[in-house]
Length: 226
Image 1 (cartoon, rainbow, N blue to C red):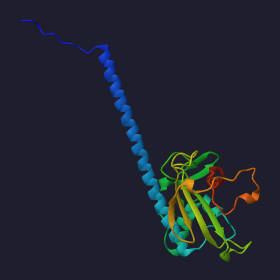
Image 2 (cartoon, rainbow, N blue to C red; image 1 turned 30 degrees about the vertical axis):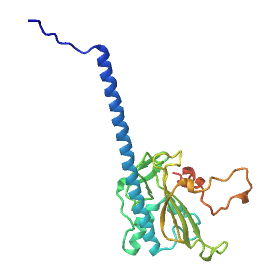
Image 3 (cartoon, helix red, strand yellow; image 1 turned 60 degrees about the vertical axis):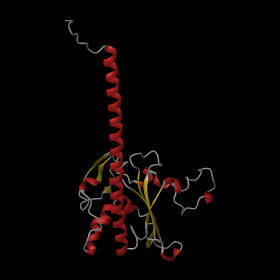
Image 4 (tube, helix red, strand yellow; image 1 turned 90 degrees about the vertical axis):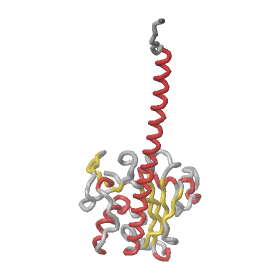
């Protein structure tokens, strides 16, 4: 009887198997990366919904964010948690109660830590990236009642609330909510819905100062220093 012979894999066959495994692995990793990002988008949108609801509730108690004389509510933008959590005690409730892992406080140049916002000024962060690119940004316009020129800012008229979605150097995938006192509603918008920053060489009258532009979301100008 003829003897049976066991044939092994050739080098070429082994290389083909390795290539197939590598391709499958890369596809799986790409899928996992997409799913991870989708999860972060969903978590960030949920957090923004909670914060926007807290702000709407805040306006039931106070008409203006920040000090009456602050047209841009800079004290709110550097410490939003204090307004939404700490100030709520004066009306016997907090407007929001996010977990401590969603907070960050600067403790020195280039350093930060998670902390309890009842103790110190605290930024609220999204579910993307690293500090400071993951800090929620607020662009706020306060105005005097009746629009009196030079009057104190007694009500908040416009809020832009933004997450850079992990890509601070581009705006096409930003997550943005827009609120105005005219409607008292939060609407999702895109960066492309707003005018481009004014041409630096154009006359100063070419750009209405009340028009929100992409330039308003420059992290260097929105975030406070250490």
